[in-house]
Length: 481
Ligand code: 5AD
Ligand code: SF4
Image 1 (cartoon, rainbow, N blue to C red):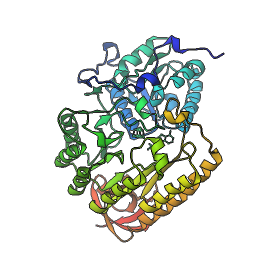
Image 2: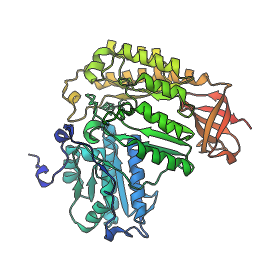
Image 3: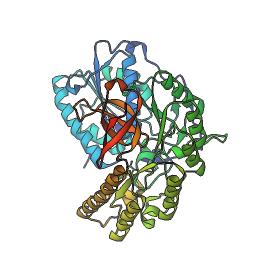
Image 4: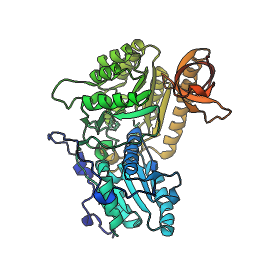
């Protein structure tokens, strides 16, 4: 019989994480403190952070970098040389988790040679009971586990891990507060992620996020606007407003203040480029469409995950819209926002999906002709309602559907990109292109990657580029001097 480790610790609980109470969300301004013993703990030492998953994790890693650097640690790109290694993990699909377990295996060998190294696991996987049990059983070389609600406690937790021989675990299955005034060290000097809210209350039946990231809670407009003003003053050209569903922004406030209001106020700061993600097709308001269309510095690009094109599947997924209402919203966005581009997420092989139901998804792609689509095979996540559904679809069939879907998706991506041939577009020049030959790279307002020739003195500027070639994933061009 498997040993029950849960009695040794107060670990995460998916059942508890599901709970949504009526308590007010606390906004904690003074919660981040560095204990005396840790103030200079990082002098002469290095850290390595590996980030998996979505932009919320990317942004959390920037917070951890900021915290570690404020204790004197410096970043290294060599995992096996670092004094502190953190894996910031993703739980959205099984293959994301398998990658992390592979890395944890590598770390076993490294820790054998360098036992003083601290290895910590955090992020969404840390919020899963099963994962914690497996680490306790099979990976005792893990020094520290902390969840998505505990990031601001990193200095204290690191201290405990250094002092203790036991695995230090601090994961709260709480609905969540908002912690302000935590440092951040951003990866990109031109583009910044800005959290506007945390958590998700949508509970789509396949999705683990509402359990790992707690309830929907919005940051105050003044805190967001202050952050945007600061970013603008320090030279940032582009910000992306982040939330699992940004449309829900402000629904938890007593006063009426919506995502459309926030976008309007952020646009008025005059920062050059504003993006936002992700938008659920269910509560995308007309006012939001109008605001995006109205302000030049709100980029004409919408990520609008459809997930499936079939009404029965959408119902089982708990998505609260149907194919017709999705198309109506899509049409409105296309009609009102000049030269807008639209991307999406699609899941194939939801339990018992039939060939006909899958065909409806293909039809949806044909209708919308997306600029880009992220496609996934459904992956059951323990604790979610869909994981309890019996499934009669073979993995082979799901793989074959994914392939057919990708062919269709790619065909439209290429067709959309070809429309840019000969056009002049505005690109924020980010740096040198991976293509080499002194080529530069950047993105259009519509979020198309462009590789182009031009003078590197333009790095950091928004320039005009003439498009000379169009491929499925990117455009080529030359700068208009
Ligand atoms: N299996 C497959 N894909 C999933 N996604 C979320 N949960 C799952 C799952 N269990 C996809 C959705 C979502 C994107 C971020 O990941 O398409 O929009
Ligand atoms: Fe997951 Fe649905 Fe929330 Fe997106 S809206 S994070 S898919 S539960």
